[in-house]
Each structure stands twice: as structure tokens, then as C-alpha cells.
Length: 454
Image 1 (cartoon, rainbow, N blue to C red):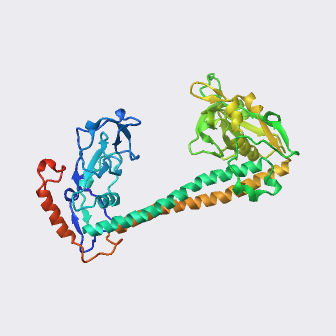
Image 2: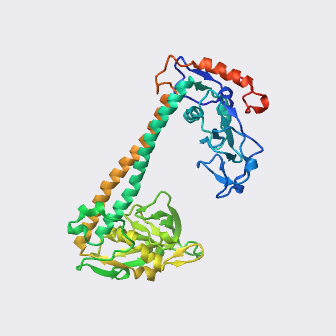
Image 3: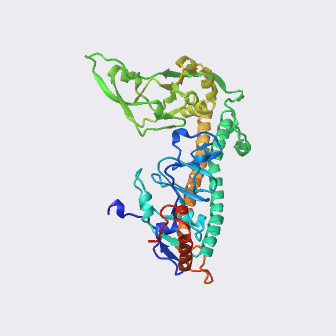
């Protein structure tokens, strides 16, 4: 089937007996103005009038140019020709530049009902191609006017409930972050192994520093308990006689805070001698040497996920001495509480920040007895696993809320959301009235595409 033959799909082709299918140009008026539109480069951060374009955000920008106001009667519906975005606009606005279609519904079609219909129809997805042609070839379901109003009221009530659910579920991500910060605050103050886990839910977010440690813990510089090494420099000049190995290496982008992103691993050519010095070992702690200032020192523990892997010079490898602290103990600490050291000691250039090996070596780390450190890591990870399971369940619930909204919308446009009332004026009679009222409007006042019924 060619694109010219494609149209939108509905949840069902079967409608209640009091409904009718009508063509696009009887359901919609097209008020798109090719002269009154504002290019994106002319958007302002603030202004008297909102600029509505086909982007994801409801408002793309602002302008003070009143002469560019859309002539569409309000409320109006904005459709993104490329993006298929649908927006309900009930304030004076300026049309964004390319790819914007401004639509309105005639008397007899509730504007919110029309908006919901446009949200419900499933248009073909042709990427960044134009989609308005598919919309124009789509028929729309017309319900009796009173039923339209009942459907809108019911959708508003149900959508309000789902919006509240989404808000509460979305808060869980913030609560998870706070819980983990509180857990780490307890862990590195020694309270976690002092039987005070039950107090975690009352804690405020800890600061960058842990100001107290148990008296039996030691405070030591990182360089005294670990071997710290920078990695291979990219673009290094080679001699013709050099025998080179091609090996995978870790970049700053691979080393995230608390995890490793191994989706894209690049390779580099090195000598056997260089490789021997740079091979990562199980338990090496990785920390970023450079990048944005807030990313200095972020990292995680290497678990030998990739064989014969090395690291570049913007990633430090920290190899702890035996029986000091577990690697994850160090990484949890530096990710949460080492940030102040990285902020204070990092060097800022025009675009990037970096921290030297000597400054990293001077960072102080609390050192409990080894067995206690092992227990602290176990408790941290046990608590994190529980909260991550709850967060995962909340994420799934959030996805289900979105699917529920879609299901409710589909039910509405199958005519199943609200019972039909035999006292309602049938849609056929309503359509006759719409035709009569349109025929009485001078052509110059009609929206494009509304001059006649198909």
C-alpha cells in the first residue's frame, strides 16, 4: 500500500448506533496560516505570547510580536506534521515555523472531545516524514453532543486519578536516591554496623562529607593503601618497528557513578609492555580523571567483564592493597563522599576539569577493620537490592498507568466508556445541523478544508 492510501487506525470500526463516521474535513477546520509563523531562531525565553511548535514541550518559546498571533478560534489543536505531537491550546499563541498544523472543531463537536479523538487515532509512523496527509484521509467518530460531554467529563476524572498516580510513582525515584544517601551516611559514620539501621527512614540527606567515624577506624590517604595508575594516552606516536596489539579499553563514558556502561567499547593499539602494565584486574576501582567538574572521581569496580581490557589516561585505576577495605567499600565512599575532595582539588580549564594523581592520592578514606568493612558492604548492597526491587515495581506500575490511559481512551472511542442515552440527539441529526451552520458562514471566515462535505 502506498503512503497516499494510508490513514489512521481506530480501536474499533464498530460504533454505537447513535454515532457516525465522518470525514476529516467535516470533523476539523484547518486554521494553519503559512504567513503567520515564527522560526525557531527567533524564539525568546520570555514574552507576551507563547510560541507553539511541533516539539515535545507544550510551549517552544515566546515572542512579543502580536501581529503573528494565530487567527484560529480558541481552543485550538496543534498537530505536529513531522512529530505527530498533539497539543490543546486555549490561550492566544503564535504558530511555530515548519511542520505545524492548527486545527479547530466546528460548533457541535466539543473541542476536548476532538482533542481526545486526535490523541486516540493511531497514525502511521513514517519517522520525520510528514503525517498530515494520513490525518486528512482519516474518518473520525462523531458521538451525540451530550454524550461527547459525558465522555469528556469521565475522561477528565479518570485522567486526573492517573495523573495523581503518576506523580506519586514518579516521586519514588527521588525517595530511592534519598534512602540510598541515608544508608551510605549511616554506613560511613559506623552506625550501620552499630545496629541502627531502623533509624534510616528518618534521616535527612547527608552532606558531601562524613564528619565522624568510630574511634577504632583509621583515616588514611588513598595513596597509602592503594596503587594508583593512569592509563594509555590516545594518539601516541609509534615507531615503524613497534609490534602492536589491538585491545579493548575503557573511556570516561564507560565509567559511570556506581556502574560501568560497557555497551560501546573501543579498541586501541598498544605494545605488549604497555598492555602488561595496563591490564585491569578483578577488583580494580576505576575513577574518572577528567570531564565535567561534577563527574570527577566518579566510578565503579571492575569485575573482569571483558578479557584483556586496559584503560585510557582519563581513567584512574586504583588497586587496593590486600586486606585494607573491599573495593566496593572504597567506590561507595568516593562516589558519595569523595565529591567534596574532587571539587576542592580538581583543576578547571576552559572546558574541562581534571584531578591529578597526587591530589587523588591525598584523599583521606575512613578504614574500619577489614571484616567490618566487608559487613558494611554486605548491608549496603542488601538494602540497595530491596529498594531497587521496589523502584523496579514502581517503574512497572508507571508503565501500566500509561497503558491504562491508552485503554481508557480506546474504550471512549469505541463508545463503551459511557452508556448511550436514547434521549440524546443522534449524531446524524447533529451532523445535519453542523452542515447547515457551516453553509451559513461566509467562505472567507471558514478554516481551510471546511468548504464542503465529502
